[in-house]
Image 1 (tube, rainbow, N blue to C red):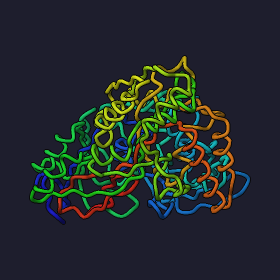
Image 2: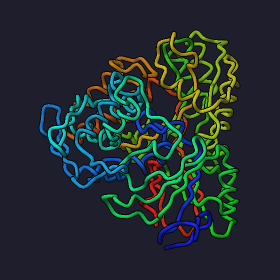
Image 3: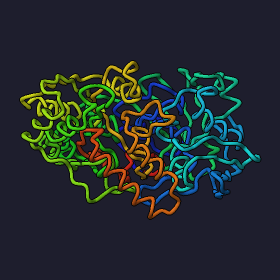
Image 4: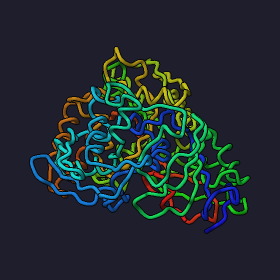
Length: 506
């Protein structure tokens, strides 16, 4: 077993080592369902493990679910392993999994969850048919449904959650401030928990699968890249995420530390809600894309750690359209389109987070300055906590429900399929969280969801991306690279989907 700076060494029990991981934000919930944030998954997935294994570029593979069988008529049967237990000793049953899926989808029996909108968009429900078998029902083609439940299925202990937290009641999230408030089936169980600050995990002795290399894992967070990098530099932490380009050199010059990088599945863009002026004009939205030099931002603000983009998804995603080029900055074209839109003299504000994405506030400030340089548009920037942006993104398109129509968000298409990058934003029926109203774009996405032939569906998704490029629901910016600061002794390669799993490390 390797020795790590940041480990507890002789203070830890057993024969293993420990590892400390510093994220950008610490989960503000202990409920595995009422969020859709990558940092939260990176912590909670070690406790409430995924039911399937997703390998970027390769697909979905068995994990807790051993076998799947497409029954037909919008139904797939899942067969669970029979040796999986929760951390409190209860056996995992199909009833637990079915209830967890239904709790994610139905606000009347669970907690309002963006997973239901963005992650399980076509899933209609689940029902246990035996002790370890259940059926999942969906409204899309089986292949798309598999992308969804294969990525977003977790299991909570139904009776334990109801008894302890009334988790079958509408809006009741699991909450608490003790290690005993967690109960999953994952390879690690919680032994110490300081709400908002730190969680310490230890290997679960009765875990059904292979024992992970590290006996103990500590997760904490620091919103500042300099603070995260310093933690790795000084040995207080063994791995951190979202290293800024200007901090790369520090780690490269630190003995025992290094930077590892991968082009991610996360694209950064500026949604424009088209139910309010001036964003209700196609010409104005096009103008915003021509005003921003996205390729220049990648080079100057991101030091080349990214790729300019002109569609909602990145290469490697099923349905990515290789024929779509990014918009190129053309100030004259932008000013002309603003005049054509009838919104000359418009005053707009770009709202953006700080510390959530790679150099996010600097990217936003640069984009806003470039828009403001137009002779007929005034654009300011407002840097806020990420939660403000997240709320704006899920507020829908009803002007009475939102007051932020123009903002920065990043979206990691972790399912590996374009549908996850578009349906939550653009489909109209039964989607109160959408950010854009366009029937043609919505219909194209819904049509793609019903296509069973993989090649035909991929072609339709490429058409969806072309439509999105033309209709400009976003100012398209870039796909970012993920930069990690890592203790050199750790054997681990970063993933395109930004997931950090300790069980993949040695």
